[in-house]
Amino acid sequence: MRRIFPILLTLALCFPEARAQYSWVSAYPSLPTFSLPVELVNAGDGTNRMFIVQQRGIIYVIENSPTVSTRKVFLDLSDRVSQSGSEMGLLGLAFHPDYRNNGYLYVNYTGGSPLTSYVSRYQVSASNPDSAVRSSELILLTVAQPFTNHNGGKIAFGPDGYLYIGLGDGGSGNDPGNRAQNRSLLLGKVLRINVDSTAGGNNYTIPPTNPYFENTQGWRQEIYAYGIRNPWKFTFDRLNGTLWLGDVGQDAREEVDIIISGGNYGWRLMEGSLCTPGVNPNCLDTAGLIRPVWEYPNAGSDIAVTGGYVYRGSLIPSMVGKYLCADYGSGKTWALTYTGIGTATAVLLTDETYAISTFGEDEQGELYLCSYSSTGRIYRLNGPPSSVGEIGTPVQFGLEQNHPNPFNPTTEIRFRIAEGGVATLKVFDMLGREVATLVNENLPSGTHVRTFDAAGLASGVYYYRLTAGTLIETRKMILAR
Image 1 (cartoon, rainbow, N blue to C red):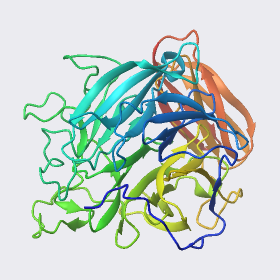
Image 2: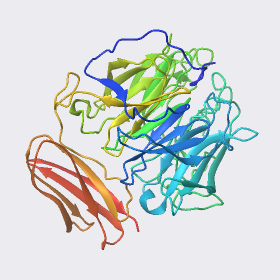
Image 3: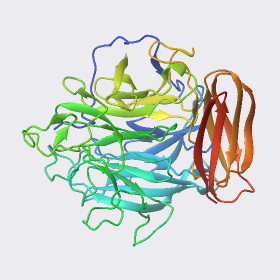
Image 4: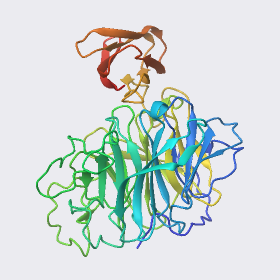
């Protein structure tokens, strides 16, 4: 039985880069190393900080600067999480969309006896923004784990403001309890909950748009998607909200999926696009199962997909819109191009000499990754600054989802202009009345950011519209006081 974190690999070969113009360079060369880093996120609060999660229970916070040389312990949960390594421990961290005002952060960890996955809320110190209060834990969700592997662990807030939670199938081989297909259980699923309200004795509520909301079949209403083996990492495209997930395979395939509400992604009936030997050798009951948008065989050193991000930064225009992912075992990284139809095409970017446990995104949309080791480091994607790259296309017109969303009272709006010229960015209320003009000027090609301050406006839904020449794009945002 493969694990996503087997005993650390020692890679004796130094693989050449597949495309010399792209590389991963040390992001913070003066920082001490990190022990078994498994998550790297920003708080979305405008402070330009990065938070590094160590598997054994410590979260560090650093300034996002290449010259940073010190780190601070943000939260130490090492006495609460499993210390055995493997696929257990502190695995996920997410900051509330309104973290700037409420100070809420959420973690996913495995611990206890019997072994249990916990999703808990903590709060930052009122007097120290670089420290969370250990005693503030509020447990939202507990899920018993029958085995030590396939814990999943990723959590993230979607553009809808709900918290998404990835849970593996419970472990062992071939999902012996058929948990991933059983919608009366939470294992083998992506869940979606509303952390801003409580009901029914739970410290959360079920979004009414969840696919099994108030169903009468006994299915868990928290379920957003199912048929998933081990969703180690998933992320949302900050431009359009698409949910990308890397599902770790068993013996044959590593897969990348685009997750939709109510989708069944096949496990244990299928592993990627293949029917599972010993479970479904005759390929029965596969109608309606959603196939991966990309997959690769996990033979040899390619052993576990590490899901990544769609690049939406501004420093490497040729990479904009491409989904970057990696293989934990081989150290390979790829850039995927997906048109929304059929399968994605992939280009090998690099072969690194270290195990890759996670990717990260800073507030500006630039991408990073972590090497999984007792002396782990953080690397930043480096590439050509020109508007057209070998694998890319010119900078495209686009309006991103504001962040945070919902917000109170300020939020950032990022947008791209393909060609220099006059552009406008305006905000309207539900009745179509203009309430703010954020841009009305001549702008150069590239990515731009504006802050919308809604002080004095009532709570509710607002629309923001970008216009450049004949191109127009509109998005919705929510002011929640």
